[in-house]
Length: 67
Image 1 (cartoon, rainbow, N blue to C red):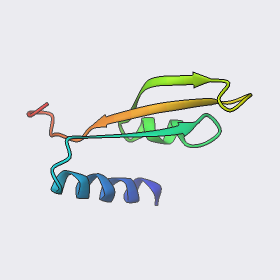
Image 2: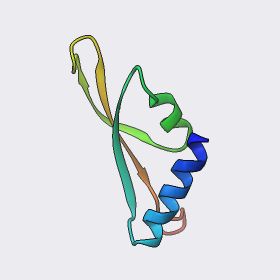
Image 3: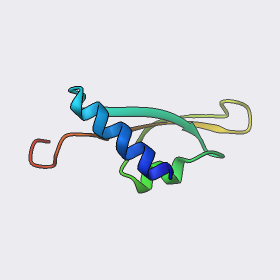
Image 4: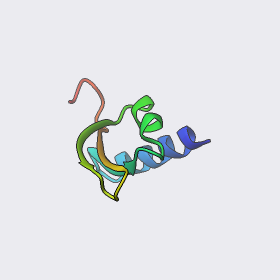
């Protein structure tokens, strides 16, 4: 279900002219899920909040031949 929701959101973003997406998540949340659907980590804040890491992730939404 999560994958489908993200794909619909990405399609809507593309329709509105967006070329990329970014989000942040925590290690106890869905980092691996986002990686499986094509997001890559571009930054991390260790111990934020204390005992956890906050990850910043991005995904290029342009078709491969345009990117």
